[in-house]
Image 1 (tube, rainbow, N blue to C red):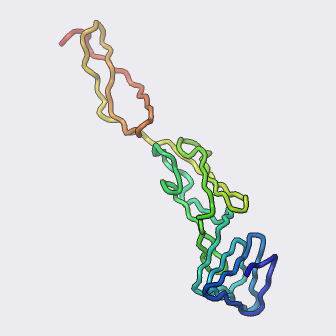
Image 2: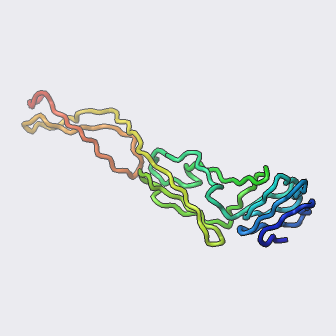
Image 3: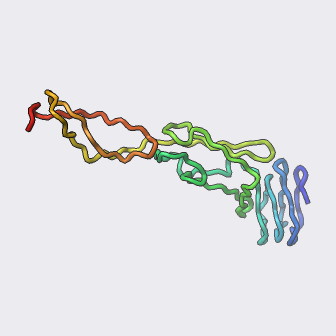
Length: 193
């Protein structure tokens, strides 16, 4: 059964095992008084289920996200050298609670895209595209990683009449990153010894 528009239930309603009640995004089903919706099948609610009486052990699902369904448990991440995605690094919770029941998000019908999700900045974004053509975007920040520089040493050299030399060092940089370390070194004496 598919709810059309706004429906108010003053009497008990059961979604039987093997059956599905669909509440589209533009619809609302509300229990009034002591009426109870008992879901022993599937309650597929992209719209709103309101009231206080929702029971049953069936499936409570939805597949069209709203901005309120998405929570970034962290909104700022330290640069890691690769892109942040839902599968790699982003700490995101997607859930919807209606009438005290947690509805499970079915992501099989949703597309996900990313922008600026690798480099340092405040404009990294993940966008979920719904099957109805709507989309939800959330932004997050990527902050610089503190580099650890170690094993700094003046490189030995062949005599060339001056004291300047190059500096060697070890830095914990990520593969593919180009880091320049600004350091100068000089020997105390230009002569061989």
